[in-house]
Each structure stands twice: as C-alpha cells, then as structure tokens.
Picture (cartoon, helix red, strand yellow):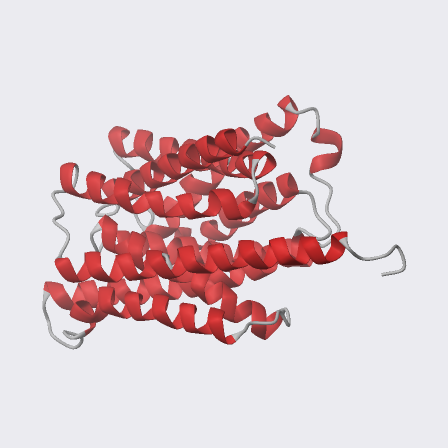
Length: 307
C-alpha cells in the first residue's frame, strides 16, 4: 500500500473527469445528449482495452459471470450520464458538480433498502444533513418552475441532474453486487460498451454532424473518461477507499475554476453554502465508515479460529 500514490492517482482521476465534463459542456449547445454519451463511451473503450492488454490480463479480465448484472449497471449508468450531460447545457458547471454529490448520499439509503446494509441513526442524520445542502443549492432554481424564462430551463436542469444522481446511486448498488463476482476491468469495459450501444437508440431523434472542433472535443472527452477510470481504479490498489474517497470533493475546486475562467460562471453564495454542507456530510460519512472499519478489523483480530 502507498497512500501518497493512491491519493495522487485519485486527484489525477478527478482532474480528468472534470475536464471531460467541461468538454461535454462546451459542445452541449449544439450536440444532442445521446450523441455526447456515445462519444464519451465509445472512445473510452480503446483506452480501457489498451490498459487491460498492457497488464497482460486480456484473456481473463473481461470474462463475465453476470451478464444481466452488467446490463442493468450499464442501463442505469447510461441514464445517469445522459441526465447529467443534459443538465450541463442548462446549469453552471459548479452547480451540476454540487448536485451530483447527492449520489453517494443516496447510495447509503439505497444500500439499506436493496442490500440490507445496516444504517444507524448517525449515518441517516448525516445523509439528511447532506441532502439539506443539496436542497439549499437547488432551492433558487426550483422557486421559478412554471415561468416561461431562462430560470425555468435551469429548473429543468436541476431536476435532470437530481434524477441523474439517483440513477448514479442505483448504479453504485449494482457495482457493489458485481464486484463480488466480477473483475473490475470487466465492470468498467462493459459499462462503456453498454452505454455506447444504448446511446445509439437516440440516433433517430436528431444527431448532428459536429464541427471539426466539436468532434475533437468529444473524442478527447471519451479518451479522458477512459483514462480517468483507469486512474480511479488504480488509486484503490494503492490506498484504502477511506483514504482516497474524500478527494472526490476536490472536483468542486476545479469546477469553480473552470466555470469562472472558461465559461464565465460566477457562483452564488447560496450555491457555495449548500455545496459546503454536502461536502461536510460526505466527509463525515467517509470518516465514520473508516472508524467502523477499524473497529471491525480489531474485532476480527481478537477472534479465535473458531470465531
């Protein structure tokens, strides 16, 4: 284990993913969502395949045991990606990033519902705190639903990104099931294959011919997405999840910078307050999980061989 290396890899993945999202946002006014999902997914495939081949695992890494599990993970993951991309065309980048932080909070709830994980009062209270932060972020947008204005379109963006967060949380539940029987490389690879295939179903609804510049940005987004997934996977090989997970929230720093300097987006005080609360809640949950993990490890270490 090398925590410093794990953290460095995690930060690299955060930078790659937020850059990828920024590229998608830069094309969102002309390129339909389904088309963007296709580019993001299809051009990630050669990167992932190259990584698997470089590790000498091509013969074994992509074998699957649960084809249906991979399909459903790909289906809900594709919905999450599509709705998030749609929100990027309607909302500032930092706001989309902050709302997306609802996904790990919702994962805690769904894990209790679908995986029978025990969730105590502490975690429920922390999740409630985090969701309160999300509500603070979105409240200015939702107050204008029904008006024929730009603000109404932004309210739609909030709804789309929130639905995307729900789907992302459900995807995490499928991943938790898959990792028990499947290779990580297979989960990553078949998600890209599934989402690229499903995105083709949107072709009859009006794909466009990207300009050369847009084409380059979309291809780069796919390549960065694949590379980001590799860095993320590698990070967990060198450090515990509880060590590297908090660095997910570094994406807000990059989102604020890119939003301001590239897209001219000035964050509001309400958005920053809500985002800070969500980040605080997420870090508390990660800290709590680490403490519980240490206690479980200590308990196992004092057990007799008979248990």
